[in-house]
Image (cartoon, rainbow, N blue to C red):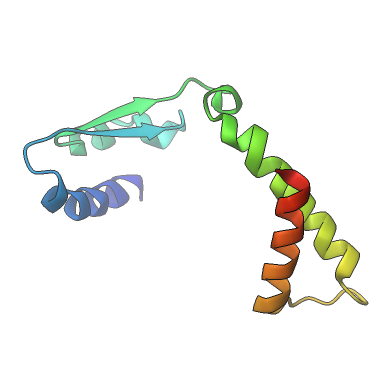
Amino acid sequence: ITVRWLQHFNEYIRPHIIGIYCLLILDSHNSHVSLGFVQACKEIIPLCLPSHTTHVLQPLNVGVFRPLAKAYKKEVKKNSLFGAERITNREFLLYFQRARQQAI
């Protein structure tokens, strides 16, 4: 699956970056470091992040997105009546706006 995804990615980006290499940043999952994957990286430089370091190397995940996700879940719980399973688009935007104000 990973090699097929890379082939699709390569077909998509090729017309946009003719003659230039592309840097593809990955976590260090086993499927990303297979021989087939590396061989499929034509003019793509795969950069694997060290294991268990994404929280340090991706500070937005820790400093922005995680608090936003927590605040959004809290907002949904606070406003859902009787365990409603669906949220309308309007409710989503309202809850997201409130969560964003709390988190950022």
